[in-house]
Image 1 (cartoon, rainbow, N blue to C red):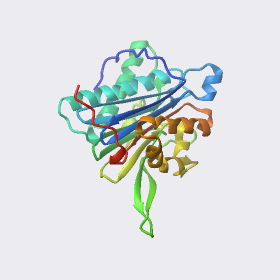
Image 2: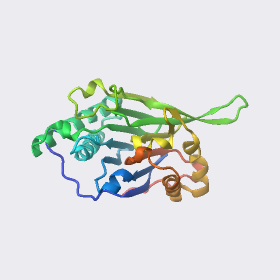
Image 3: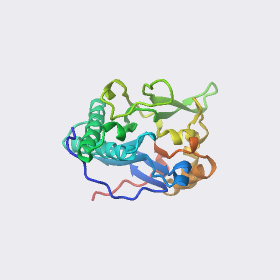
Image 4: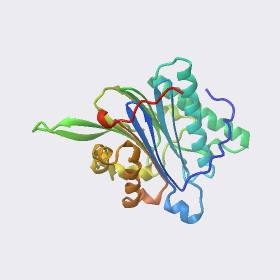
Length: 283
């Protein structure tokens, strides 16, 4: 576990960011946007995310700093970096992706936040942040969540007429306290609040992680909306993976963020084999 403060990150936070990455057989897409409420007040973005990969696996991590806590954005950054560091070291040392490995990475995030709080001389709760992550290798998908961010998966099923039907299902849903609050990874009792899941199947077409500002990509209130996720395959064919970012730009333009909040949306999807990018050459 991480016991010392992680290196400070100096990358500038984006007003908006759209990017795609390729880790066969998965196309990974990210969308991050400064929320209108924070933007208009000149406040920093509280969301943070990180995407990385090694040893044939990759991870997607999103953290949403709790708005009522003054240093939550630093907690979100520290949590994401700690999860990545823990996973990268473990995988490079020969560990296989597993639910235990991902939960241990959440423990590293908890430790990193407390180390940062001690180093900077502030109470750990002022760094409160949610945390959601997926670790993926081939057909294996592992997810974990603390707080109110969401992980869902999309699959194709045949309807009663034998035609493919896209279906969204929740993959990880963490416990929530009563009222409007949310549990945070900095909380000493975080192991009681974590939800995790794992599955290995070729039938999962998409994996979606969203902070609450981006929930409208696949949620309408408490109910799933499949309009945007179900269009991914069609958009991949029309735009090709190289130009798929235009689909996310279209979403930003036509779908406002939930509650004017920061929004982070991380997507992993499988392009059809005939339009998949070429395999990356060894470095």
